[in-house]
Amino acid sequence: MELWWNSLDLYLKIMWGIAIPFSIIFIIQMIMTFVGMGGHGDISTDADVSTGTGTDTDSGAHMPVQFFTFRNLVNFFLGFSWTGISLYNTINDKVWLTFLCVLTGLVLVIIVMSLLYMLSKTTQSGNIDIKNAIGRPATVYFTIPAAGKGMGKIQMSIQQAVREYDAVSESGEPLHTGSMVRVKSVIDAHTLLVENLNS
Image (cartoon, rainbow, N blue to C red):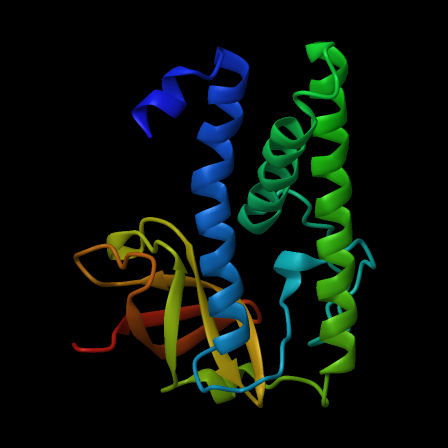
């Protein structure tokens, strides 16, 4: 492994340095999305994966497009890095290769956002009543800071669909990615107050 790594030039080391961690994160995201909290096969998405339709499928209210999300960041660097690795020996001009990497990353983001949006449409079975989330378990998707000092994200199964919501916590310790939590109350249409499931 060390011999292989040392044989790479700086450009390839950068590409592999991006590809490996973001590929792992992508796999974890896919497992969390398809397995969900209750073993449901349905897939649904929140405003986090809006494709620019300008509407929230939960309430019908107008919402701004959210393009710069953690999920999209992962998808971009996934397409960016693997394109660089795949075409490294084909395209000698590194400037042109980097341009293609950026373009591929953006295209992948758009494709995934579109697919998730279509999946959310096909699995929509009436409006989600966010109050039904109270008392239900969830998985921390993006670390929630302690004592309400910031916002994270959770993923949970509600009304036979897996959804993501912004979340805050009153706990004295941050709730890290992968932690199990329970919804205490609803703050607004897209934000929940959660607590450690073991508390």
